[in-house]
Image (cartoon, rainbow, N blue to C red; front, side, top):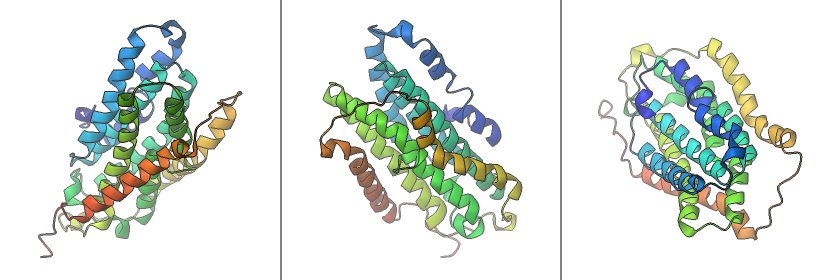
Length: 283
């Protein structure tokens, strides 16, 4: 999946958000009645949990902008497949739809950034993006936060519901750890991306090619921004005709928020250690 990043960015936006990568998940959603009570689902749960975990780990060591977003797609696919292997196909479909919104927005913003950087994908060359293209950076940050599952954005409704259903089912500690650690890792590489792109000084590598905002792209990006704000609550009203009854203690309910705050804090600490590229030109 991250090796398929040689394609043009609109192609990868379509492929990773809605078309080609999620076709297997959609096929298993359609065939979910044939798959109940199979021993295959236990293996699928283990494999998709490990997929979430390893994709989150390897997104932290990637320097290609599109590969980071591809690995986050892989992590969300592991989330969909694992909740599908627990027999809740409507939750998997709900997360498929909400993930399509903010991931398409994320790839469109990344395409604008790459085009502005004169086709450089390495995030070590970037920095200080938010001074030059503020609206694209706004869309990028909001879709990243929706990916992390910040409350009341699109990703929160599906992701939080999935994690609470995992917490209610009597699974072992390893599945539990894989789920929550992968959620923390999502926050981690998002903060890393934000530090490389927004906080870092501008690296002056491709300074002659700084365009202004691409207003043709911004029209569709604002539509996707609006959708990734409202589509979570809207779809959770529209899809579930019968509410999921979730009885959990308060610490287990807040566990997603705790893990997100821990990922935020540790990502901030790691990025504050100035591991990212020191600006050799300005020095």
